[in-house]
Length: 155
Image (cartoon, rainbow, N blue to C red; front, side, top):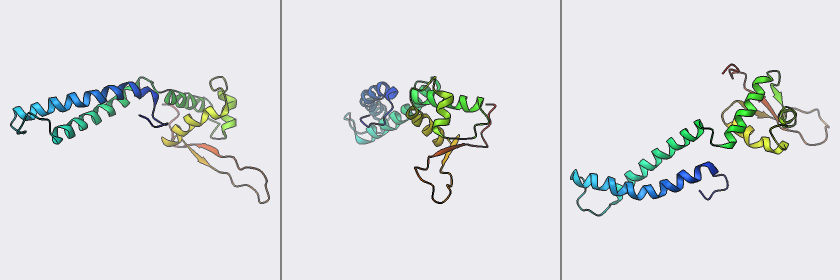
């Protein structure tokens, strides 16, 4: 949770799950104790391990639910960029600046497209490439994006 890249929309659920872990360890341990799987009433390492597995399960489901609810603003922005690409099918090879011309009403600056484009690259909707430049060309070679030709634009 202390990482710079930790999604802010997960802070609340993760903080609660941290507290729930101790409670679950106690519950799991007493279930094990009643079933004669644990020898003492003191919580042992196995109960804590099983509690950690439950917390991991709850975290994965929290991510899925929050994604379905569009709680992550980065995902919302990526879906918006995807909608722009869907409306502009001829835009199959573009730079950030090209995309910004179509999306400037929703994005304050060109750099604000980095996070949504990163998500779309990770999910293989687009890929990055560096075009081949003629020998002797000057200046930076800008990164471009290409829409995945296998992406079904009807979905």
